[in-house]
Amino acid sequence: EVQLVQSGAEVKKPGESLKISCKGSGYSFTSYWIGWVRQMPGKGLEWMGIIYPGDSDTRYSPSFQGQVTISADKSISTAYLQWSSLKASDTAMYYCARRNTAIDYWGQGTLVTVSS
Amino acid sequence: SYVLTQPPSVSVAPGKTARITCGGNNIGSKSVHWYQQKPGQAPVLVIYYDSDRPSGIPERFSGSNSGNTATLTISRVEAGDEADYYCQVWDSSSDLHWVFGGGTKLTVL
Image (cartoon, rainbow over the protein chains, first blue to last red):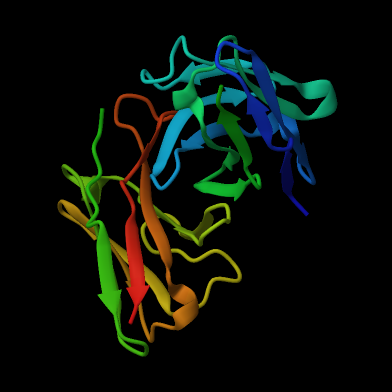
């Protein structure tokens, strides 16, 4: 069974750093692109970027370029999304998802709350 | 980048047919995928490649795509279909970039 399991909810202060994770199982992790999607409270889905764990080829949405870093460790089938300095406006649910013919599997989401 | 336009809301009575549109420039030349998101849950793929259904998705869900509009049709709507629905394509500028519509809230009256 294909699964993407994300790390737990985080509460951070503005200016702090954060790295959240997405662990894949039940398939060849290195053979599918993994993307990250932001959903701000009460809002729609926004694509942030994508990584190919096989060679770490990474692409970013222009809206998120320079704001976050996407990485992967194929030895442990895990993709990451990180911030070096969080802002209150980063408060959102973040999903990882697998690209196939469509986006066929999603993680359960990681809620990130940034508040002083 | 490519823009997808959805109506913010659609309302339908139980047992009737709901149609949710997704507009885009010459969207008929692209493959459109649809996702259902219920409150507090991750999105779920309900239609891919315009009109194909993943296993486990009821036949009541169907899709079409032509010209500048793609449509998700839900027949014999049930209370459990109440959710947000998003259309999605791969961007024209890069097949690796994902584009989502703004989402449509389906309300079952």
